Image (cartoon, rainbow, N blue to C red):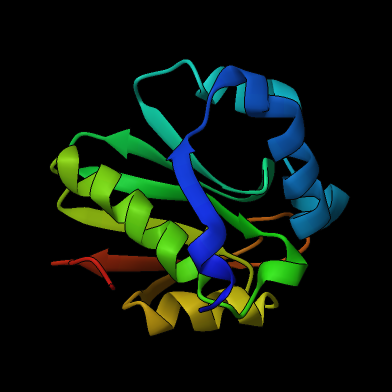
Length: 155
């Protein structure tokens, strides 16, 4: 049995904001991480839903989605480095996909740095396709705009 058997997934609450912000910083560094105020805010709005994965009481993964009419935007997927390549991201995405499906979104999109090859490879593995390149999206780098339609849970 892998590390994912000890992980409990649940909806993020406002009290998680500091810990999730620390995870985001560890995952993305100062140039792309969001602060705790952002996570505190998203915990209380209907247009977004975030899920955390906990192992032994510690948040080790987080994913969030924003909702826009019949579409949804993956805002972040972060897994602590020591839990990567163990299926945590796939299980986390499956949990997020259940949330997206419950909201009846017909399409999922996201932006990702082309230099983040691990993320690009993960998204391609679970069925996302690059549909556009947004020039200077991050200021210092373009973004791949990736989309997934007619989706189903990867598990």
